[in-house]
Structures are given as structure tokens and as C-alpha cells.
Image 1 (tube, one colour):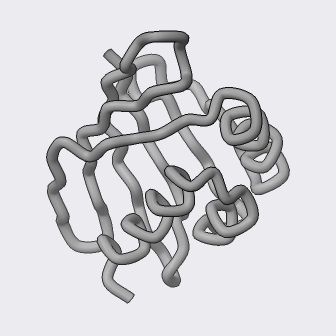
Image 2 (image 1 turned 180 degrees about the vertical axis):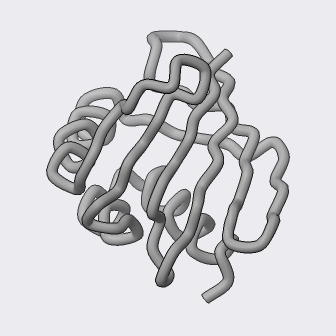
Length: 111
């Protein structure tokens, strides 16, 4: 599977708030980072489920891709996300690194 096809599936599941399908696009050892601070946002699939369960079932998040760059096994998306902050669009860049047809790491830059 091409890296961009995996990310398209992940985004489809994200926008439909389908938690299990969304989480199945990630490695069991997923690590998500805030690139500005260098801090780990979450580590492991259990934390992924916990964080996105709230986002999907309470916040009803949605994202729109503004721009995309693909380099090897990395997909870099410029995104606009609704639902994280009430009545506000959050602008972000997500750098997805793919390994064995799963998302291995994500590095976010938030506005």
C-alpha cells in the first residue's frame, strides 16, 4: 500500500469518528510527538484509543487537508481541524512516518 493511501484511509476513519478502524491504521508501538516542544503526546495503542475515544465520541473532531507532500515513506499534511477547541479551527502540520503498512510515528506542529 502506498503511504498516502494509508493516510487517506486513516483520515476517512477520523472524519467518520470510527475509533477501531482509525486505530487499526497505527502500529502497536505508535508514538505521537509535539515537534515544537519535542514532548511525546502519546505512546502505544492503548493511549491512542483513550485519547481518540474522547475526540471521536465527545468532541466529534473533523479534519480537512489543505496541502500534502509525500517523500518516501513519509506523508506531510497541512490540516485544519475542528472540534478540538469549541468554535475554532486548529491549524496543524502532521508528519506521518509509515512502516510495514502502519503509521509508526506522527509529529505534529500546531499553530
